[in-house]
Image 1 (cartoon, one colour):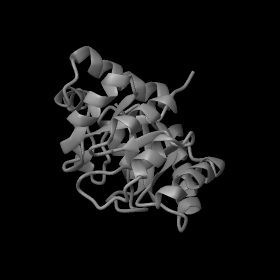
Image 2 (image 1 turned 90 degrees about the vertical axis):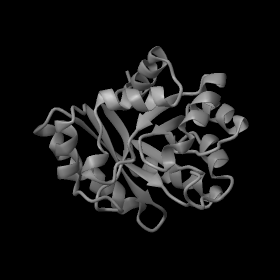
Image 3 (image 1 turned 120 degrees about the horizontal axis):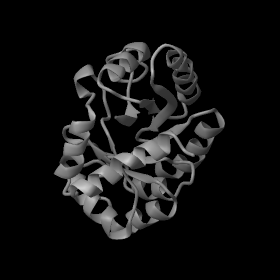
Image 4 (image 1 turned 180 degrees about the vertical axis):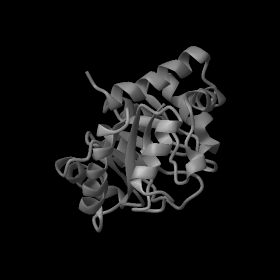
Length: 214
C-alpha cells in the first residue's frame, strides 16, 4: 500500500508521525505521505515537521514523504501556495478538493487542476469534465478516497477520469488508526468506484510511480 494523503496530530489527526508510520508499516505500507492541513499560517511548520519524520526510514522498511494538504484555501491563492510548498521541500502537495460534504470554495478544483505544483486533487466531489481534462493535461492525480463521506462521489470521479485518461490514485485521508488500509482494501475502493480489476491495479501502480519516480 502507498498512501499519498494522511494526517497527524499536527492538524486534525489522532497520531504523532512515529505512530502513524509504525501502524502503516504493520498494514504493509511501503510508502506514506504525511499531508497535514495547511494554509499560509502553518505551511513551513508542517513541512519541517513531516521532513523530520524521515528519521523513521532508518528503522523501518517504508518511505516517508513530506507533504501538505492545502485546505479551504481561496482558489486564487492555491497556485502560489503550492509553489511555495515545493520550494520549502514538500514532496507531495495535495489540494482539498470540492467534496460534497464540506463548503469548499467553488473554483478550487479548477485552480488545483491547472497547477503544475499540485500532485493530488483530493476528494474532488462532482468535478466537471473540463477540470478533469485540465488535471490530465497537468499530471495532477485525482483521488479515489477510502474516507467515509468524501467517498460518495468516487464513482463520478472514476468515470470522468477514464474518459480522458486522467491519473487516478487511491488514498485513505487517514485521521485515525482505523483509517489505514491494506492493498486488498485499496483494490476494493478502486473497484467499488466502478473500475475493472485491471484498471484498479493500474491505479495502485500510479501511486507507486508518484512515490518512487524513476
